[in-house]
Length: 359
Image 1 (cartoon, helix red, strand yellow):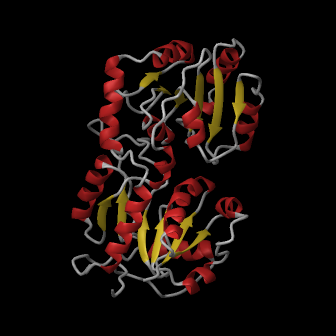
Image 2: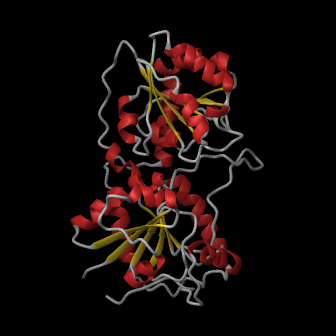
């Protein structure tokens, strides 16, 4: 049986999430198209030949399965609505009892393909409260190209990857003291720096950091982070979800004013501590190494590079499953109206229950 897949995105950073899925779908001989509801994603998709450029064409395509790396999705298009996530939980929003807020349930998805035990447990708990969706743990497609892990050869001059979130209160890229210290360190010949910044950060900030470029500092304007992960010895970051992706390699991460003092991170609170923290990360203790390993086992215990395969198989199986046990999705009238405004497409059509196909 042929299946029609739609990969639904908003931002350019979703391309590395959808690309391994596209490869898996095509390898199985199924149809797959892309659609972005924002200009950033549309620009990133230029050059591909399997794009739907308008919401009208999406509706006409009539997908069987919609893989979404977005927070919401039009309720009026056909297909099983599947959340594939645009990142690991970066733990940016603290709650009481030293916990952090989980991914929000917005009432648009039929299936959540979770990344590992920590996300599965959270969504299973939400499912009990809002039983209009199901949860299947598959691993995350974006990190498939990271595996198998190949140890990086040690160099006299270690490579440090710098990554920063766009959240204003958390971004190290906005801190002058951090900028000045990295500028100093890049001129010592002790380190090689490679840097990426979140696409949502202001262009003025990106241009500022680009000014640091020299033989020891390179700025990359890319959303394809895995080659940079592989070439780095350690990471320096704030609370970006790239931290979790990088940790899957079992390489240490130094964080600047992270929301929590996790035992698998080396967290610092001042620029003066950066160089000492780098030395600590480049010579990790046994306790740090064990803490990283324990964290990974709960975050994403899949090292085979086949999460995309599991996602596609889970979606097809669930598409044909008797889903009468699921409740109707919430009305969500305000959110649905906002989606229609954003897309300029107005209809009373709405799929209120999980989409199914006869075998």
